Length: 336
Image (cartoon, rainbow, N blue to C red; front, side, top):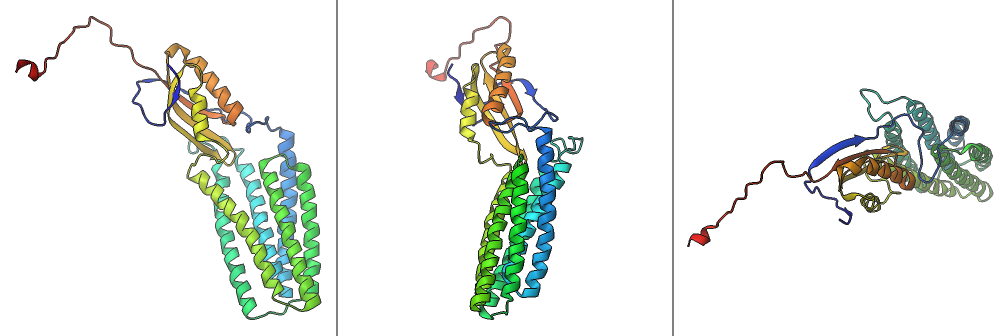
């Protein structure tokens, strides 16, 4: 019989149940190898240094923005603060994530990162609203800005961001550090916007440049915050990861030799970078199940990077043993 992929429950008879609960093996990424301990340690060191740099200079920019009257500096400080919180969350979650699964957390503690990212994004939406309201207020009521002071602090911030990018580029061996590198590149743009605002105010005296450019920085924060919120909500709502094709995976399972159909297929994200899958497979012969199970596990790991797999086998039950007594049912129409 040709294998097919069916997403509905077909009422097949139940067979045996096989789980692969591998909590302690190294994590595998799609089309990638196992992350080494040395690479993870380098990424952690890079994240620590960059977190210290960004959170330290975010405070400097916040004080400098208040002292110089520059909203552009304050908004850039908010942008750097966003990244600092994200880095601290990444470090905290990396520590929490080392804890093994226990009686209360059978899936482990990977969702801590997702919850932290969700709360972080909500906090940053508040920062964006503050910047937007303050920018409009300053456009309506111009505020004196020390352009030279703004330029000096923004140039220092640019140097800090260049240093942070260099550190991360040397230790970007994990998804966290690669994401942090993208955040730092956004901080570079924020520093350039603050430099431009200070230069315009210093050379022309046109103070609206400061709130206008601060709104551009707020748009940068809004873009990254919205992506973070969408990703965290997708995980919390147990959506199929965006990089995976649900139907393609179902067809791949149905294409394994000996699989007649696939139903009750579920794919979700257990943690920020680990995907789980469960499904019911109707197989042609019970004795083929061990081979089919191994083939499915290898295919899912190799082609889709899914290494936490729970598959339940089903097969048609044979008729009960014993002598069959034929029964003829005559409809009422035959008697008429």
